[in-house]
Image (tube, rainbow, N blue to C red; front, side, top):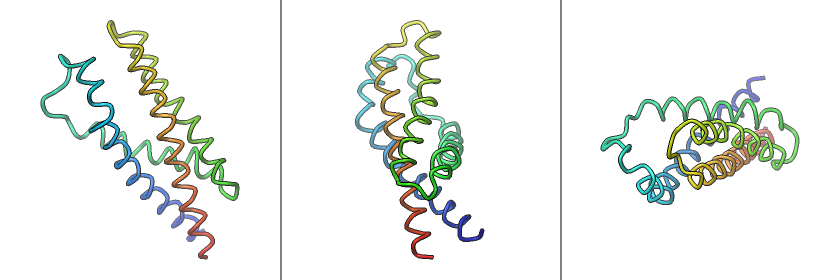
Length: 139
Protein backbone atom coordinates (compact mmCIF):
# COMPACT_ATOMS: atom_id res chain seq x y z
CA UNK A 1 0.00 0.00 0.00
CA UNK A 2 2.82 2.39 0.88
CA UNK A 3 4.49 1.84 -2.50
CA UNK A 4 1.18 2.45 -4.24
CA UNK A 5 0.63 5.71 -2.37
CA UNK A 6 4.20 6.78 -3.11
CA UNK A 7 3.70 5.96 -6.80
CA UNK A 8 0.57 8.09 -7.00
CA UNK A 9 2.15 10.91 -4.97
CA UNK A 10 5.09 10.99 -7.39
CA UNK A 11 2.67 10.88 -10.32
CA UNK A 12 0.84 13.86 -8.81
CA UNK A 13 4.07 15.85 -8.48
CA UNK A 14 5.10 14.99 -12.04
CA UNK A 15 1.67 16.01 -13.33
CA UNK A 16 1.78 19.27 -11.38
CA UNK A 17 5.20 20.13 -12.80
CA UNK A 18 4.23 19.08 -16.33
CA UNK A 19 1.02 21.11 -16.16
CA UNK A 20 2.92 24.17 -14.96
CA UNK A 21 5.32 23.85 -17.89
CA UNK A 22 2.68 23.06 -20.52
CA UNK A 23 0.21 25.67 -19.38
CA UNK A 24 2.99 28.21 -18.92
CA UNK A 25 4.00 27.78 -22.55
CA UNK A 26 0.35 27.73 -23.64
CA UNK A 27 -0.79 30.79 -21.70
CA UNK A 28 2.47 32.72 -21.80
CA UNK A 29 3.40 32.24 -25.44
CA UNK A 30 0.94 30.45 -27.69
CA UNK A 31 -2.53 31.55 -26.57
CA UNK A 32 -1.74 34.98 -25.15
CA UNK A 33 -2.17 36.73 -28.52
CA UNK A 34 -5.67 35.20 -28.75
CA UNK A 35 -6.53 36.33 -25.23
CA UNK A 36 -5.25 39.84 -25.90
CA UNK A 37 -7.10 40.01 -29.21
CA UNK A 38 -10.42 38.71 -27.89
CA UNK A 39 -10.39 39.93 -24.30
CA UNK A 40 -8.13 43.01 -24.25
CA UNK A 41 -10.65 45.15 -22.38
CA UNK A 42 -11.25 42.44 -19.78
CA UNK A 43 -7.71 41.31 -18.93
CA UNK A 44 -6.22 42.41 -15.63
CA UNK A 45 -2.92 44.25 -15.57
CA UNK A 46 -1.85 41.86 -12.79
CA UNK A 47 -3.21 38.32 -12.63
CA UNK A 48 -4.73 37.16 -9.36
CA UNK A 49 -2.70 34.07 -8.47
CA UNK A 50 -4.79 32.13 -5.97
CA UNK A 51 -7.57 30.98 -8.37
CA UNK A 52 -5.21 29.30 -10.80
CA UNK A 53 -3.16 27.81 -7.96
CA UNK A 54 -6.32 26.26 -6.50
CA UNK A 55 -7.29 25.02 -9.97
CA UNK A 56 -3.86 23.47 -10.63
CA UNK A 57 -3.78 21.69 -7.26
CA UNK A 58 -7.29 20.27 -7.62
CA UNK A 59 -7.15 19.53 -11.34
CA UNK A 60 -3.88 17.62 -11.09
CA UNK A 61 -5.37 15.60 -8.24
CA UNK A 62 -8.40 14.87 -10.45
CA UNK A 63 -6.08 13.67 -13.22
CA UNK A 64 -4.49 11.18 -10.81
CA UNK A 65 -7.78 9.99 -9.32
CA UNK A 66 -9.92 9.94 -12.48
CA UNK A 67 -7.42 9.15 -15.24
CA UNK A 68 -4.20 7.60 -13.90
CA UNK A 69 -5.43 5.46 -11.02
CA UNK A 70 -8.23 3.69 -12.96
CA UNK A 71 -5.70 2.76 -15.67
CA UNK A 72 -3.17 1.26 -13.27
CA UNK A 73 -1.74 -1.96 -14.67
CA UNK A 74 -2.92 -1.12 -18.17
CA UNK A 75 -0.99 0.52 -21.02
CA UNK A 76 -0.12 4.20 -20.61
CA UNK A 77 -2.48 4.90 -23.50
CA UNK A 78 -5.42 3.87 -21.30
CA UNK A 79 -4.59 6.63 -18.83
CA UNK A 80 -4.05 9.05 -21.71
CA UNK A 81 -7.49 8.19 -23.10
CA UNK A 82 -9.01 8.74 -19.65
CA UNK A 83 -7.17 12.05 -19.48
CA UNK A 84 -8.48 13.11 -22.86
CA UNK A 85 -12.06 12.47 -21.73
CA UNK A 86 -11.48 14.28 -18.43
CA UNK A 87 -9.92 17.26 -20.21
CA UNK A 88 -12.64 17.40 -22.86
CA UNK A 89 -15.28 17.34 -20.13
CA UNK A 90 -13.63 19.85 -17.79
CA UNK A 91 -12.52 22.34 -20.42
CA UNK A 92 -15.73 21.79 -22.36
CA UNK A 93 -17.75 22.68 -19.28
CA UNK A 94 -15.91 25.97 -18.95
CA UNK A 95 -15.69 26.91 -22.61
CA UNK A 96 -19.13 25.81 -23.76
CA UNK A 97 -20.80 27.46 -20.78
CA UNK A 98 -18.87 30.70 -21.36
CA UNK A 99 -19.79 30.64 -25.05
CA UNK A 100 -23.46 30.04 -24.29
CA UNK A 101 -23.91 32.75 -21.64
CA UNK A 102 -21.32 35.50 -22.20
CA UNK A 103 -22.13 37.92 -25.00
CA UNK A 104 -19.25 38.25 -27.42
CA UNK A 105 -17.40 35.15 -26.21
CA UNK A 106 -15.66 33.99 -29.41
CA UNK A 107 -16.32 30.55 -30.86
CA UNK A 108 -12.69 30.33 -32.01
CA UNK A 109 -11.45 30.77 -28.44
CA UNK A 110 -14.00 28.23 -27.22
CA UNK A 111 -12.83 25.57 -29.66
CA UNK A 112 -9.10 26.26 -29.35
CA UNK A 113 -9.12 26.23 -25.54
CA UNK A 114 -11.38 23.16 -25.43
CA UNK A 115 -9.04 21.17 -27.68
CA UNK A 116 -6.05 22.43 -25.71
CA UNK A 117 -7.55 21.26 -22.42
CA UNK A 118 -8.33 17.81 -23.77
CA UNK A 119 -4.86 17.46 -25.29
CA UNK A 120 -3.01 18.81 -22.24
CA UNK A 121 -4.93 16.55 -19.86
CA UNK A 122 -4.22 13.56 -22.10
CA UNK A 123 -0.49 14.36 -21.91
CA UNK A 124 -0.64 14.87 -18.14
CA UNK A 125 -2.38 11.54 -17.60
CA UNK A 126 0.21 9.84 -19.79
CA UNK A 127 3.01 11.41 -17.75
CA UNK A 128 1.38 10.33 -14.50
CA UNK A 129 0.81 6.78 -15.73
CA UNK A 130 4.41 6.53 -16.90
CA UNK A 131 5.64 7.61 -13.46
CA UNK A 132 3.47 4.97 -11.78
CA UNK A 133 4.77 2.28 -14.19
CA UNK A 134 8.36 3.34 -13.63
CA UNK A 135 7.93 3.40 -9.85
CA UNK A 136 6.21 0.02 -9.70
CA UNK A 137 8.81 -1.63 -11.95
CA UNK A 138 11.56 -0.36 -9.65
CA UNK A 139 9.79 -1.99 -6.73
